[in-house]
Length: 586
Image (cartoon, rainbow, N blue to C red; front, side, top):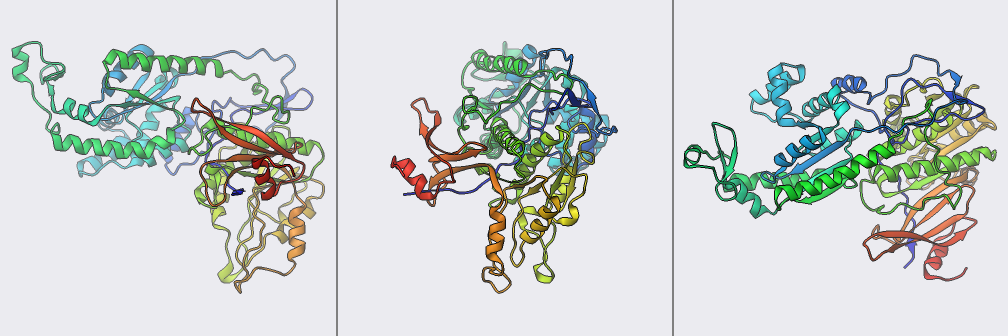
């Protein structure tokens, strides 16, 4: 059975945190360093979040400067190591011991403990604007909406003590929408701890739980009985600690966990909570110690806005190889950054070799807007990385997305591109005011080519039913002359015309024009025909290297790796790929 070669691309990542200055000894001046290795799209419908994030340094305010360039690298001091505050999320079912572990973590590491229940009570009692909104819902017996809770959490995370000491987010997020809100705001932990305890143990813990109304201390009739008869006589059981209510709460917790855990699968550490408290904490403590070491080693202060040298993926000796677990969604930030860096390096090498008509085709499971239009966000993040890397070299980049085509019933744009122009306008384009100076947003067409533009990046140009984008593209490239034009994931195949048949007028000329763009980067996973699991291997080409076919190999330790099995000067056909996997020579 021949492996098929499906096409796909990846959701929000970003890797624009640090920017480079090249050429002579000049660097682009920065207002402030960006702390994130992979900034995501900075979008929020909530004004409260936007203002809070700006004050917290998550959303970078634009520089009022003109993006001037200054001499800054001649006597740069060596980078300094700094300690990054620890960020932890913890989750656990009722009676899993989460509260006890939170207390021990805070005592050991000094993190700020944040739970939504405590925050709600504090905001309501303080009479803040968020608290007033929450109180309206609580007084009417309604659940506080996710957006209000998220505003409240983000507000707390922006406070100076949290920024300095780090945070322990207890039992939040509880829903997929809450998790995605935090992801879109680039709020992400270093580790996600999940306490695992069997249901029968949890139910027993809850049913046997007793509260001392005088001291507030919690006892258990079997596991932790009161010290004397006087205390025993005044103990009370919580009204919701009945079998039926505990079972219902467990079901709710499981449902919420199933919704949010995929978001943090790359950070998830599951801990057996059905052990003595000290033993559980010993394992958690060991994990957090490693996190502290990693964040301290990896967090380097930038010197004059210049980060550590990136890996040049053009050299096979230096290339890190294909990331593993690519069928796991969502991909980790490291995986997404790998692909962004790989694309940027290959494209820069092609531009340095005076290539002016380039095409990027990158298809990984998380990134296919043809199957999920919301995945266009990651594609735009890739475009941002690419554009900012050239802007750092002093190039003026025009980022283009096609507008509405056609007339009457056939007017419109492809679904995958709907709303992308507006998102581009709201994206975080770096901390030195690049947008409007070195980077501008435009459409596809000759009228969009200005004399001050140095290069053009076109986001997923594609034909639509009854309409063809290639004429506008040809006019644009003609106007651009010898300035580089880069197509990112183009879809230039013919679409049905108004009569329901494939467009034929000028088809040969259109296909010839589409083929005039040289591929500088290509990556896609290989599967058996008609399936998307398991991954059989991968096909990669990074300019100026050949097309490389890799086989995915499962190892005895439960891990996997990709092994190079064939190389081709030209893009291999499905038969070439099949023969490579079967070990046949061409």
